[in-house]
Image 1: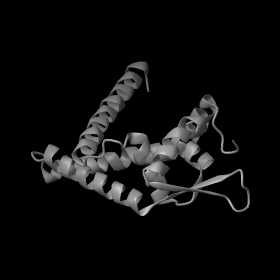
Image 2 (image 1 turned 180 degrees about the vertical axis):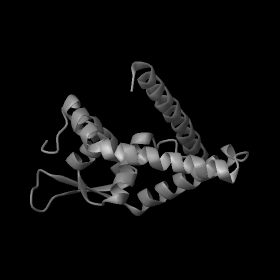
Image 3 (image 1 turned 120 degrees about the vertical axis):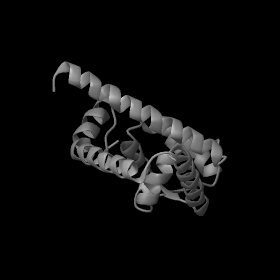
Length: 164
């Protein structure tokens, strides 16, 4: 790619990201999940994919520093969305798991997101929707191919490691 193509690529990615961010915000409001920010949702989804993760695991998967997550996780425990227990083998280690209420929040949010997406795409043809899905699949494959490299670079830049 040349510099002009690089700029257009980044610009297009940012525009798509902004669209998804707005869709996320609207779905949060529709589901009346005012306290569920993007990071809270990412934590819930991470625990739904793989339950019983350490703070380090969550920190690394979100590429966020542990101290930045601690207060948020405390609030999520207080809100009944996640449970926190000491690791039986290492009492210094905290294990996080998703509660039933946390699963319900994910379902409510995703229903609102789907409803919102249907409303936003009411004038989009099935053919256009299929083309968009195919383009997303290609983008996801590209991102997955490079995600470990990106995660390593970003984590190092932020001072995050799996060993912390």
